[in-house]
Amino acid sequence: MKVLFYAAKVYDKKSFGNVLGQFPEITIDYIDPELEPRTAVLAKGYDAVCAFVSADVGAETLTILKDCGVMAVLMRCAGFNNVDVEKAKELGIIVKRVPGYSPESVAELAMALALAVNRRLYKAYNKVRENDYTLKGLRGVNFYGKTAGIVGTGKIGAAMCRICRGFGMRVIAYDVYQNPALSDFVEYVTMDELLAQSDLISLHCPLMDSTYHMINIESIKKMKDGVILVNTSRGALVNTQELIEGIRLNKFLGVGLDVYEEETGNVYEDRSDDIMEHSVTARLLAFPNVMITSHQGFYTLEALAAIAETTLQNLMDAKEGKRTPNDVA
Ligand code: NAI
Image (spheres, rainbow, N blue to C red):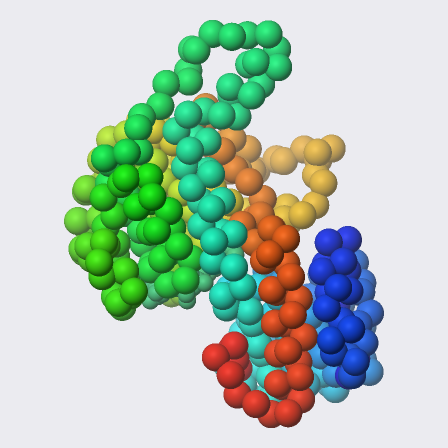
């Protein structure tokens, strides 16, 4: 079976190359362009395409893929908000993803961001490099004894709950379903209670109509002053303009973002020579209490290995018509 692998990076070729030997029926061609309507036609003659978080797997792309004879879209990620699931079903294109490759890889980055903005590690690093050993602007707070509010307690949220417990924090959570594995130390509360009580809020729910802009000026006003907000889930969970308004109201001790609304054109690109004319991201970065990373939650050795193996197994399952929990469509 032939796979066309879009937006391939060096690390993708390495991690997929490491497991390809386990799947002798599969061959992969790696290409640089992102999957979108203009590039979908390149998939002519392939059985499947492999795509990532910034691909445009909307109706137009799917229709072209169908005309090219593609039977499966393999998402090498957990989220699938960029896939038109209904259209894929209508066209009979199988879409599979990798839901739980390494929850700790994302949860550990969420805690790293929380610690970095709390103790201003990005500032401290640069200050010491410039022979400035003063402590100005570096004061943080203890996490020990504070309250962590986790929104979404699936695989990654549950890992984040365990990490916060390890820091000696009280852990409260909001989810539409309660995770029984966490019942011994997590207290489920309403979203409003979570906003009002948490010193650290970390978002771990998927992007859906019901979660779009769940963090907005109304929800920010319900938060404690001096709260830390971390988003490693999807950018559009947070209304960026209203987050900026909240930062200006001095609501936040720190904001750590691995994902943000404007990221699509940026993710994994070097744009250091570009002038970002209308960028709200640039405005966010001007604040001393904000740290942004570029969608690197999944980027650990363990997670990459698991993504590669599961993605290729997904193709084998698709070929055999096997329905699994990794099915999106
Ligand atoms: P999961 O499916 O195991 O858990 C998601 C949880 O969110 C579920 O418990 C679900 O009930 C809950 N949820 C659904 N609607 C909700 C709502 N309205 N309010 C509160 N909770 C709600 O997903 P997993 O694996 O934990 O991933 C979570 C998200 O993390 C993914 O959707 C993806 O967007 C993001 N992600 C980010 C990565 C990165 O590199 N930064 C890598 C992998 C995932």
